Length: 80
Image 1 (tube, rainbow, N blue to C red):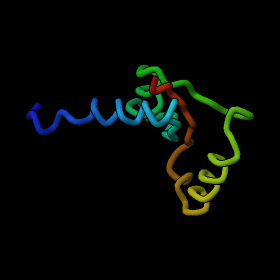
Image 2 (image 1 turned 120 degrees about the vertical axis):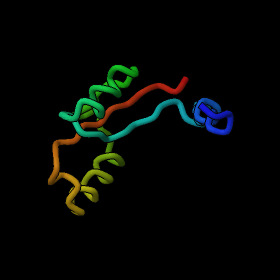
Image 3 (image 1 turned 45 degrees about the horizontal axis):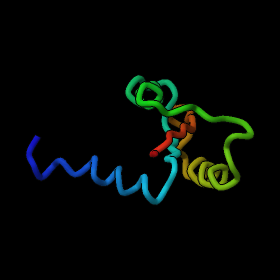
Image 4 (image 1 turned 60 degrees about the vertical axis):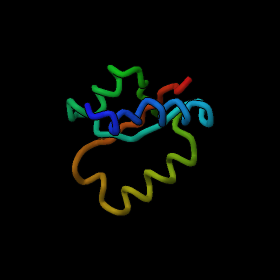
């Protein structure tokens, strides 16, 4: 990797100072999506674990047609 491309770890470190965790939405059945994030330490969340803010975001995404390709899952991972 070129030295100029080694900024990701620093960015993640700065994000960890400001935020305790990262929540994402990804496709459940695509091997390099949800299964990858689980291998990286993320945990799939569902039901009552999904808060109202994330539910609202997903509703907007569904209204724009994002759900037509595949089922999505939510996952969260600690940054600290």
